[in-house]
Structures are given as structure tokens and as C-alpha cells.
Image 1 (tube, rainbow, N blue to C red):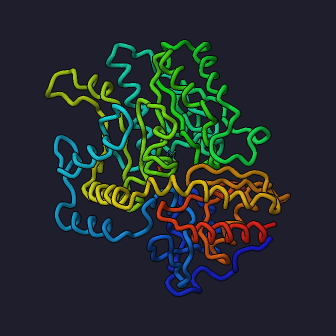
Image 2: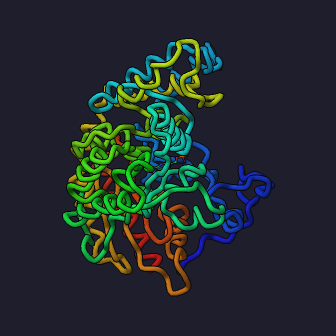
Image 3: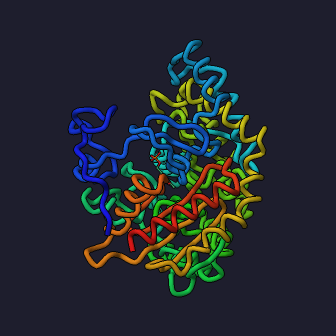
Length: 450
Ligand code: PMP
């Protein structure tokens, strides 16, 4: 198996002399610092490395730069905003951009999801949604509803709420007992029944009925909310089986539970429509978003809630804060300016329709990798794909790590790898020729790490 070129970290011009002080997130720090993957510039579909090579970004930053990198109108909007109003407290004060952006997002959301609470990341969005769910039951006199239901192989960020409802073992096992009173639905992925599926698998809708079993065990009066990703992204692109989300909705209605769709990845066109809720024809009670709202330029996240939820909070005395929750940087002016310019680009370039139109070609192109050495499954949905490689005999994750290095150092492509799964999720501006390039480079990566 090839390894990255073994040059000292400081050999290339522009590489910082001391890489040690930065403790990098979700990174194999020691291996990275031997052969750093450093990027200094980006534009559109491409990034430039510290040593001057141009790479295709096959993952839109990290599922976030949906309008492409460094788009001029977004850059200009951020610059204008920084020169005009850097910051104003979000508590008891505001600025016009926050209200405008909330309105624009609400207009894109389905049905009566009409109100937007802003924060700064997907993790904060998830914890915010879980807290709103608990508080909503509480103020309606149902404070016994405290249990939260997530799903195995779900990823909901790294806050204590998010890792508690999340279902990724390494993200959980070092951090104690987590939130009390959390249960998990089973994963909807079953390789034997779903291998090499384009779009939503036929098999698996019945797995939603596990919610009935959990309710039977604890009683509905103890359960607040269910949170799922319509397509689990971080654990390898696992789209919900056909009919699964509808069944979850029915069961949540039956038992009085709030249904939260975590659309941090699927939001803003990844699966075609602005939100996956629309693709599946299911209206959740809350949608969490982040990433694509600013095309990755300025950190921002948020929760969209149904009118009825917001209205319930508005029934108390007028001069009392309705929800004791928020962040110093909620609705930060720079993020709002970036968000407004990003939504303009999505609209003006019709990027959600473009994403939907490209889905079939993207799926066909990625599926052509079937049959390459060690490819044991491929899943595609929207402009997202997961390609599972068989683990190397030396251990899980080794082949995946080599694939990432091979992409960065030899094939001039940034691909995302979790374990031995390669994920592809290009910006919605991707051209058909660029889809071809991404798939060709991925094929070379897979052959090289064989
Ligand atoms: N929820 C989902 C579904 C995600 O995919 C992610 C990040 N990939 C998060 C939450 C967490 O977002 P962040 O990293 O911005 O905190």
C-alpha cells in the first residue's frame, strides 16, 4: 500500500515551522504532521496546496461549500458587512440582516416551519433543537417527556446532546455516561439487502416501527423527540429507505413526539430540493441546518421550527425572555451577510434544480466503480456517494487513510474518508466533465490502495 511522500513538515515553502501547537480536530495528528495536507487558496471546484498544486475538491469543503469556493458575491458581501457592522449583541438587540435571513430560510423550508433560531455550527444546532424539544414539552405541562431518541450510525455533531443521540461508537465511548435517558433506533443500513443501491433502498421502512417498541418500553409520556438525518452522511451516505421517514412521522404523531430532521448535510440542495424533507414529502417539527447556509464561508447553524412550537413559547409575559438559550455569536452579522449572498446565488444560478438534474449522471458515474478491487458497496443519493472498501488485513481504517493520502498527494483530489469509506459530495456547481474527473481520480485512488 503506498504511503504519502515522507518529507519533513517544514521542507516545503509556506509550511509553518512548528506544526505541534495546533491540536487538530478529528485528525490523526502525528501522521498528519509527518506529511501535512495543507491548502492555501480555493476557487470554485478547486483548491491550491501550499506547494502550488491544484486539486479538485470532490467534497465541497466538507459537505458545505455548496455554491463552490470563494464565490465573488459572497466574498464581497462579507467584506461589506465587516466594514459596516462587525458585531452587535444578539441578546435583546439585533440587526436587519438576521431578520432578513430568517425570513429567507423560512420561505425555503416546507409547510409551517416558519421560525429560525441561529447558532454557529451543526453541533450547536442539534443541541438547540433538543433543548427546544424539552422546553416545549415542559411549558405545555408535560415535563415528564425527557427521553430523546436517536439512531445507530447517526451523526449529530459533538456536543453532549449530539453525541448522546448520535450512534458512532468512537465518538461516544471516551466520554462517560452522556445524557441520561437516550435510546436509539436501529441503523437502516443492511449491506446484504441494499448493496449498490442508487437512491433510497427498497428494503428497510419497517425499521421505523422499532419506535413503537421503544415507546412500549418507556411509555410515550416520558419521550420528547426523535432525531434522525434523512440521509446519514458522516457514516457513509446512508439514505433513508423508501417510506421509512413517513412511518417515523406517523409514529411520532401517534405518540405525541417531536420529529427533528438533522439536515446539516442534506440542507441547501445536497439531495436536490433545498431540504430533504421536501424530497421525501415529510414535514418534521424542526430542521437543523448549518454548512450550506453560508456555503461554508462563515460558521453558521440554526434550527427551523414549526409555527405552533414558536407560538407556544410566545404565550408567557411579554417582558420575560421566552427561551433561556443562545450564543454570543447567534446571527453574527458576517454570517448573515454571507448567508443572504449564498441564498441569492442558489436562487440566481438555480443550483438546487441543477443538483437534482445531475443526480442520475452522478449516480451512473460513481456506480461505474463497482468491480474495482476491494469495492464492497456503493451508495448514491443526490450529489452524495459513499464507496465502501474492504478493510486492509493490517486493520480497519488503514486502506481509507491511504486513499485520502493518495488522493491528496498523487491524484490531485480531495476526497473524504471515514474508516474505509470514501465519500464524494461535490459542490452543486460541479460540471459533468468534473464529475468524470472526480470518478476517474477516485478509480485511480482505489486501484492504488488495492
Ligand atoms: N449534524 C450532522 C448531520 C452533521 O453531518 C454534522 C457535521 N458533519 C453535524 C451535525 C455537526 O456539525 P458541526 O461540525 O458544524 O458542528
